[in-house]
Image (cartoon, rainbow, N blue to C red; front, side):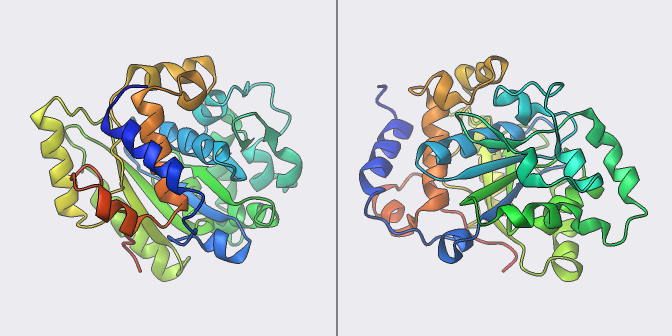
Length: 304
């Protein structure tokens, strides 16, 4: 195994995992009900689906019960877990439009369970317009599943329309992936306005779990500058592990598997395993005492 910071970090997490009690933002852990996390950013290509798939797989590998809800009509999360979107018997369209039981639509994979998506979902936003309490369609569909899982992840479409609004109304918290590239913060102000409106009018309990830096290239000053700019705009709220640019991470979806299955020794796999460890463990003091690098900043809540 390569001797880099991500590898060292995950080894420390694995060593500590058995003795650290789950506390950090773990509504699901504390109540026995699944914690629902929406992966949201209206800007495309920021690593949103990649993060949802790989964090779900990493948590499942750690022994957690994880369901990934693919709520993006592009269905990349579905294919990224090896499920053929055109052959799935039922999809997220069926559970929000046709009132099909979500439990019967779940597809089990060796990486995690998934509610598959397909192109039919692209018309759901229009079909929901005339529906009473249309913002809560997904929330009502997922509610019966909360007792069956520890975590439910929602992969949102890259837009701020009715499908994303449904995800925000269903979620306990949100995770915002931000790429370490030019225009990284473009559009985030619109997202923040939407989140505050949702919190005020539709889902008072929603909060931001953290901002996850993706496509980080430690060899360039530019990535470091963008990361610093993100931290300046979200002080104390940037996620613990920056996700690096990694060839194996880019290749994994074409093979229909998460990176932890495609190449478990890659830097991408180690980074997502580290992020997953932060997600279900209370690692504030652990990280503070062992990790001094600015690459590892503990996630804080934004809307609390």
